[in-house]
Image (cartoon, rainbow, N blue to C red; front, side):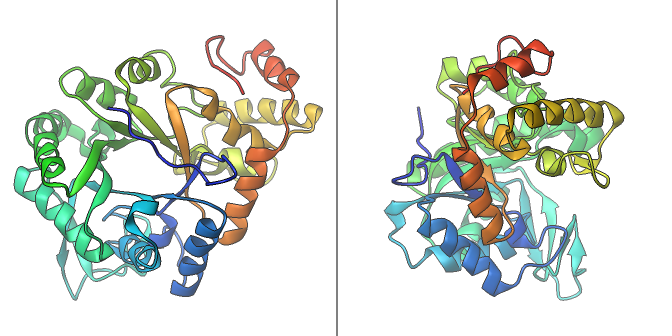
Amino acid sequence: MTYFFPSCSGSGLRLGLGGAPLGNLFSAVSDEDARALVEGAWASGCRSFDTAPHYGHGLSERRLGDALRRHPRDDYVLSSKVGRVLTPDAAALTAQHGYVDILPFNQSWDFSIAGTRRSVEDSLQRLGLPRLDVVYVHDPDAATHGARAPEVLRQVIDETLPALQQLKKEGLVRAIGLGTNDVAVVLQVLSEAELDVLMLAGRYSLLDHSALPELLPQCVARGVRIALGGVFNSGILATGVRDGTPSFNYAPAAREWVERTARIESVCEAHGVPLRAAALQFPLAHPAVEIVMLGARQVAEWDDAQAMLQHPIAPQFWESLRAQGLLPAGAPTP
């Protein structure tokens, strides 16, 4: 099955809004600013939106649902995730898992059949909507689960994905996939199960090409459409490395990533190309990638991303990156 993520209508921009900042990731966003962001994205033509119970312990879902309910349900694609369930707790900490000023819930892992159904139904209640277009199994990887990772993977294949298939039959879900930043876990799942879509964060970017050799060709061959997150690798490809301490994969960037980014920045400067423009446009050239989901925090960031996607980049820029060994030989370019 091929599932289409609508781009920014009229403009043809393949850009969707990621909802982690709407859950107060790292710092608080007011309800007013959250609504303004969603409304601004909608006004620009955005019709693809992503969220998760993890994002602010339901806060992102609540805010996104409040903003989207005024629009006809068939006019946009909305995704959320399963794997974590939320339990009310008046004593819950106000900051957990990188999110601040969260809703009064604690979260726990649950990839069971019952937990998957509960997660989807709870998300629909928080959103105030009758269905989800896409549901991703969230973070079923070794870095997250450690020694339990093989057990989690087995449960995802044997329970979570079949439960989501049943929810598809019932009309509560239209497409299913994984939401992860781990290439290996996707390959393991694809060896035993069928997916419609994939939310891949940070593993196919201007800097990190780890999904290119094996995963992306499999997705093309099997018709698995990719919504790509983390194209700035959590900051380093948005800010560059000239000032401050850049972040890569939500941690201070290792020296190899800093040095590689500095070389990319030098090529950008030589060709008059903003680093953000190159980072946004590069991954969209691959035929497996359908859309980039941008975790914008404010309207200005969303507007900047649109401008960067339209910034003209000559073929010589990509040729220069490849000639310096900064792009793999097999990586398609715009």
